[in-house]
Length: 383
Ligand SMILES: *Cc1c(COP(=O)(O)O)cnc(C)c1O
View: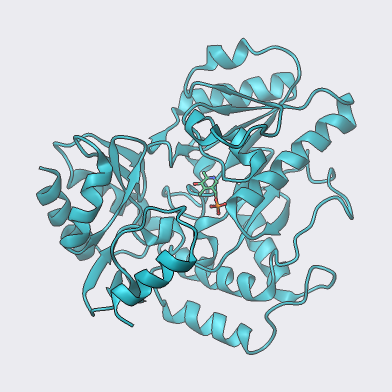
C-alpha cells in the first residue's frame, strides 16, 4: 500500500484523536525509520520514548520471537518465569521492594494511586486521601490520571474527574508546606515531560522528601517517561539522591512492547493484597521477555546516556535547552508544532514539549555520529 491508501483507511475507520504527521512508517532499524516510499528518517522520538534500544534490536527480536514461540500469555492466575526475573531486576535497579505489572503508564499511575490511598486509609481511616501533583505535570489519560495531571487543558469536557487531587507549582516548597490536612501523597515527575521537559531542582526534591517523612506523606514518582535510563540514571529520582515510597514506569521498559507497572518500597508493599488490584495482560511472559532483553542491552549503554545527552545539549548551544540525559527540549522560537513537519521533511523525527519547545528522545543506543546528524538538521530548521 502507498501512503495515501493507508491514510484513507485511517480517515475512514480510525477516530480522529491524533493530529498525525503525513507519513506512514513501515520498518525500523536501530535509530532509523523507513516510510512506505523507502525514505529514511533519523528517529529522535523513539515512539515517545518507548523504543529505548532502537528499532528491531537483534537481541530484542530474538527474545520476543523465542518467547512468542514458547508461551505468550497465561493471565496472572499462574506463575511464569519472565515475570519473576524481570521483577527481581527492577527491584535491584530501583532499590524498592515489590513490583506490579500493568500495560501502560496511565494504568501504572492508577495502581500507584490506589496503593497510596489504601495505605492512608489503613493507617489513618477515611478522608486522608488527597494526592498532590504539580502544575504542568502529565500523568495519563484515564479519568483518575487526568485529575492527577496539573494542566487544565486536559480537564476540559470530561468532568467530573476523580476527586482528591491538588496541584502546586514545581520547585515551590512553600506552596507544598502551606497545604492543609487530608494529604496522603505527593506524586512528581523528576523531569516534567509532556509539560515541556522541566527538570525539578535537587534542593526542591530533597525538601519534598523531608516534608513527606515529617508528615507521613508518601513520596511517589511518575517515572513513565524519565525511567529506565532515559535521564542518565536507571530512574530519575536517582538524580536527586532520594528513595521514594513508590514509583511507576512504562514507556522505555520493553522497547516498544506495551508494558508498565509500579514498584513499592517497604512502607507500601504490604498494602495491596490478593483481589485488590489486577490486570489481564499485565506482565505477561511476552512483555517481560521483551523488557529483560531491553535491560540486558541497556546495562551496556546506560552509563553513556549522560555523556550523549551532554553532546546533544552542547550541539544546541545558542538555543534555550532544557532536560536531563537523553530527554532534551530546545526552544522552537515560536509554535513548536510548525517545526515538526519541517524536521520530518529533512529526515528527522522529533516531538513537541509544552507550548514552546521541540522535544528530543533519541533511542538510548544512539551513536555520536547519529547525534551529530540530527543536530545538523535541528540547527538548520531552528535558526
Ligand atoms: C506518557 C506518560 C504517561 C502516560 O502513559 P501511557 O502509557 O500513555 O498511559 C504518564 N506519565 C508520564 C510522565 C508520561 O510521560
